[in-house]
Length: 467
Image (cartoon, rainbow, N blue to C red; front, side):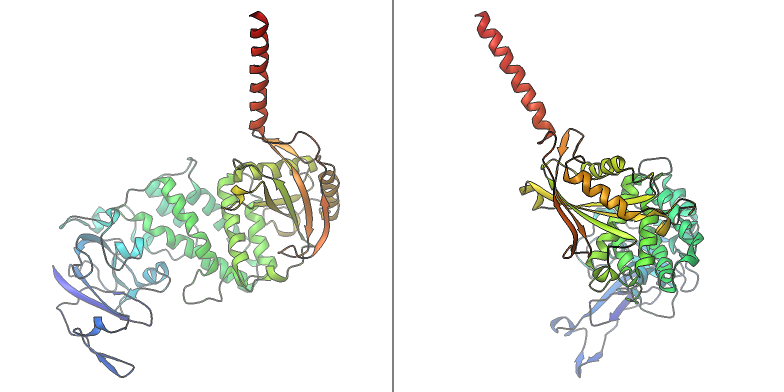
């Protein structure tokens, strides 16, 4: 063992990683005409940080790696316990950290990446249990069951999920097989329809495909004990960051800069995949729409919902026990009554459930509609085009008289009012109707309570008669 020293210069806190460089050194640099040395740098308001990393000579070759070789080391300057460090490509480090970290020696293709930085973005302090190791532990190339290319995916294809992730976790066929089944399906789908997107859309698809794979590389670390459910959660957590800025050094490649045609082609193709579980496809497109709504300059701000996509806003009577699943199920029941699927119409429901909703007796629901032939890449385009005007008019008629209210899992859900929105904020309306209070109203659980009270009352009546 010998000590190597690494340092990085930036206007923000920045660590740089390297290996095979020995001994302690004095750092002298000039910033704004001020000399800084190792003695006084920590008393100045400059973002200079030093990272000491023990390494084994030759294990992580600067040109050949290999990726995945893992060492246990003690970085005493910033941590007081041993932690894992993995030999990995400089490209992966930059992509995983969104450009925050990289190898100090920029000529190196490979260097060590500490567990606390990779998993937790923690530059100092305690070493978490999932990163701890004992002095002398190691995972050499002969201990690894995956090829080195798995640890730094190129993102050029879709086989990484099957060749790398599935080989480690065997999630196919389980309820948590998102990362394998769902991601592979749509990765291939976009490759097959690649030329249907604009140049900007193609760049975004390429970047997101790689970003989503890179975000899952950490699950392959041999010292982690993860389940398929853990992998699924890590995958979902990566979606919004990968949609918004999949390439750290290029803010122009973003869902915020996609045109309407590119975005809706991706969005509605995912939604139409009914063979996938709602948990997978629903959460994915909800994260896409959520990311787009947060963009300050996206097409959505000026989009007119009077053409190929329609937006309905419903005001519902709300009970605190209503879940996202129940509210989405209610919209599915509306779609069944109006026969949207048979008419070639795809829908997406976006319930408004937050901390303020639970204290209210009302909540809102956005429903997006489109013709399957327009944006769904799964469609064979042999169906007769849908008439969205007719679909919206049918909705208005039935909503007004209360025929769309219904019971979902014991909860009676009532539409109080509905609007046709011409813009994303619903500032401009095509209609605004108040619904009739038709049918049974109230909490389905309250109905059961009322029945129990009635039964008890009848029992008391007969008991009193008997006495």
